[in-house]
Image (cartoon, rainbow, N blue to C red; front, side, top):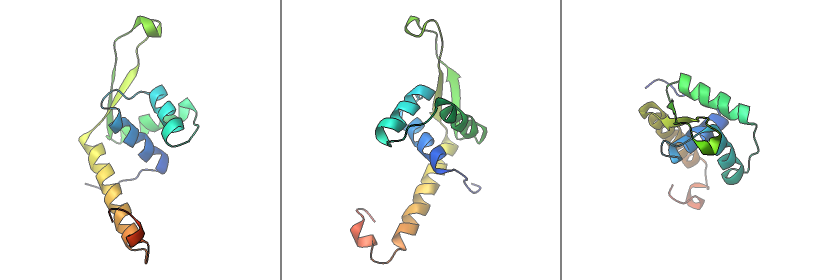
Length: 112
């Protein structure tokens, strides 16, 4: 696999897409970022990150069925791809390796 280029925000969005198990959509990700990462972001930033991740092949999307609850509108649902999973694994491995190289901190970090 070629080098993975993800910014921190893209990485968080990709992690959230994976955690939503095929039911990820812009507003849900925006709300999860506020709740879990204490980050207030604009919905357009979330949509831009999702488009970048899709263009990199890390996520795929499909349209849901229209619902009365949404006023007859559909939502775009995102799913992590195998490439996206591999990208996250590669990033995690790199981070763990770098943490292990910090003298004196390894013993303070659980699981490392």
